[in-house]
Length: 179
Image 1 (cartoon, rainbow, N blue to C red):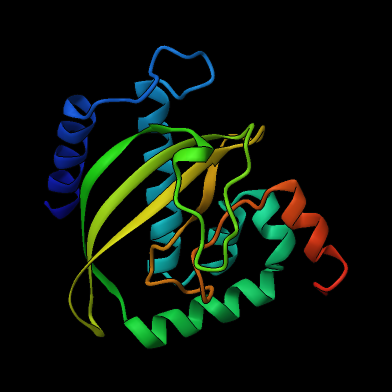
Image 2 (cartoon, rainbow, N blue to C red):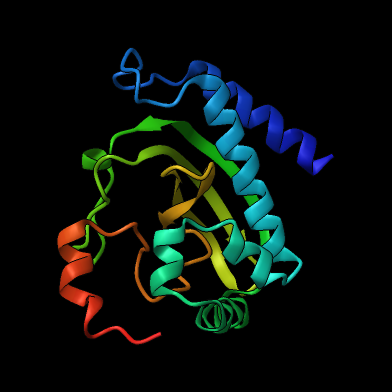
């Protein structure tokens, strides 16, 4: 029943939310927004079932470059210990978005241009966190289908909002980041 209500709320927000620049060819269509949301649910269900390898596979390859599988697993397990299980998820907004419109991270890393994004905003609750949070996800299609492309969902398990870094940021960090 919870899954049905979540889906119903999602579709109503999708149908009634304005899509910026919806006429541009590179922006996701409504069908692609639904597809990206479905992949997000798979990504989230992998977290809920503690299948961090599957969750990592549903993450954009550019993020996986900076977060090798074991490191990803360690951070997700730490997130679960800190926040507990996700107990509620309500869709507040869903639609295509351009990289320039997405918020940069706390450390000033911004989303890469030339990648198609779908923005999903949620009201969430966790068993180990008092009150509700507003969190977001940027689902990305950078050539391999829709994948988790960043956001602060799961109460920032990676220490800051995650993003697909710009080429400049990637170049700057490549030498100092060891896998």
